[in-house]
Length: 135
Image (cartoon, rainbow, N blue to C red):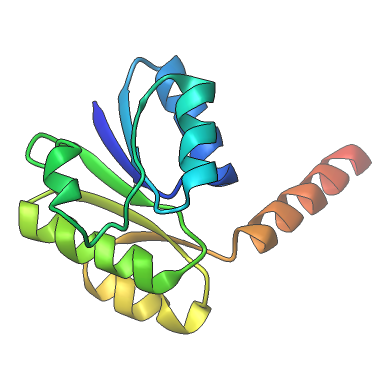
């Protein structure tokens, strides 16, 4: 599977590691030079250090053959831009981190699978661990 990640922060790093373990091809896009370089060095993948809206970068990242685009930045406007561009290219599987829950409906209205407030999901999982210890 050919995955395009928008963002190269901690979530994208974990996702890259898991995807590569499963034999998927991963390409990432992030305008932050340090994050982009860290991801590239750590996983030896193709990383474009540019804003998602510049220079047809999604095409250069293989958008025409991508199976999925996953937007993982902490900026909903960047994630939304990535989704719009991916839809234009016909990428069918679209996923995004939604940082502001007020934006959830907008993303879902575009057919995007979303994760809202990952910190809350992690906290709930920890509580699940506690509950399972009591049984």
